[in-house]
Length: 195
Image: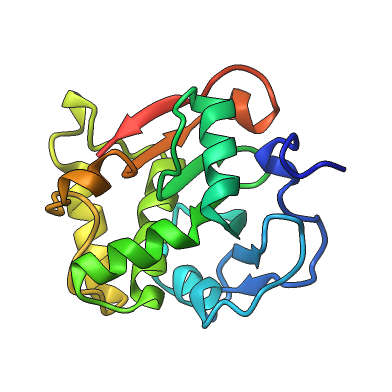
């Protein structure tokens, strides 16, 4: 299977290997991979996200940590944007899939003055909230997503979130999220959600 042509729902293998159950016994399972289904050392990202996730987060969530080149290909394929973005969200089986560009995350971590692990947590939390139906760009949201992000990031020990972050002009073009059930199934372009 050519990973550059695979829909995001195929970025992870099904099965229990690599799933991280929430400690409280709730039902969020997170699998972190390299985008080809191979587990990667996640520094506790899967467990952390399962622990801070809202109760509405039930099911399986795949997180693929990929290169900027891979993210650029996905962003171009599904959003017709020819650059690497930080995180893409795809609805699908279970809760869905998040794809995070590690190079973009490293640059954003440096700009924000925190570690890569912290940035991965910020991006994963933000992407999860989009998969749960939150949309800070929707006028009807009325700050709902930002309030939820603030509550959960505080619970998880994060000082800052993604919404409202000051982004340097060069990084602004690489800071978008997308979500779409059609894209997860390999059809249509995802609905873009800009920060």
